[in-house]
Image (tube, rainbow, N blue to C red; front, side):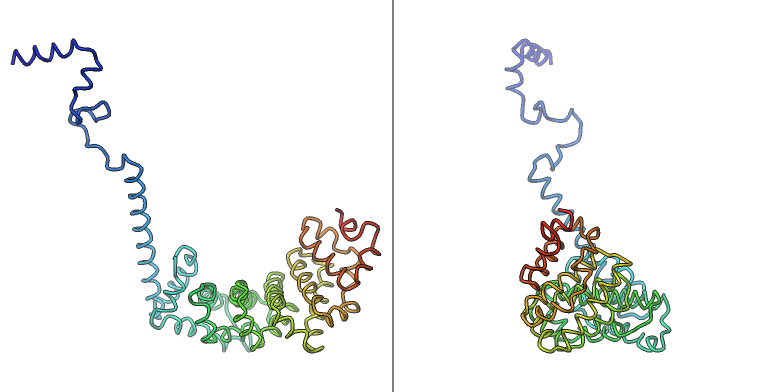
Length: 348
């Protein structure tokens, strides 16, 4: 024992660098104190990243397990209402919810059952706020299916959008019906947003354009905006533009509704709605016959600067309006409006 103490004393007289060099690895300067906890397994970046990935996977698994249980609950009439509410609220955080909804046995049938069950409340209009909220939650899940690349075509092939058309054919302006129309339009809007020719081809075989025109005439500002967006996306497709401009009746049906909305915006301005209206007019002007017709039926308010203030902070829409006026006048209208052209007139 005495010899051991002497040895330690001799070592302690050596330079500190020599002493530290002779320490065993387990007693390095970075080691915890004697009797302390073992080194953490997360001390390396790779280990920490692996741990975080494992936590993310566990979190995803828990979310999917929760989503799967809620989807199963949809087929239980006693649990369906709460499942509809929870899934509609959390659909953004559930990855791949759309394929899960589509491929789960009986789920789409349960959602369609919710839709069909309120048909008797449409005429006469007796839809309650509670029933409207419930079916709109079901529609929100169908919008999820319509938006997903793996289920969109299957959704169309099953002709599911047709189940929504009775909701777009209503005329009641009460909140339950307006909410129903808006949510239904959201499903169609999700379909056209992806610029898929198959979607446009499908919709043109249905009465979607007259139904959108109806909403553009009598819906709320938000419903009008979504319905006009749908018509705009149809027009932006070459087949859709030809379809609307093939007959005078179709063109003037669309043109009349657009013109009426422009007039209504004079008293109740809406930049986002005006933006879609101008974009529809601009696309119509790409068709020669329609462009010639617009020379006589384009609302004067789009020519005389009525919406200067409304468009002051929207340069893209100002350019669209300038191009529209140039198209229908061959450039003469824009230059005649005011020295400096349309951009000067709009405050640029």
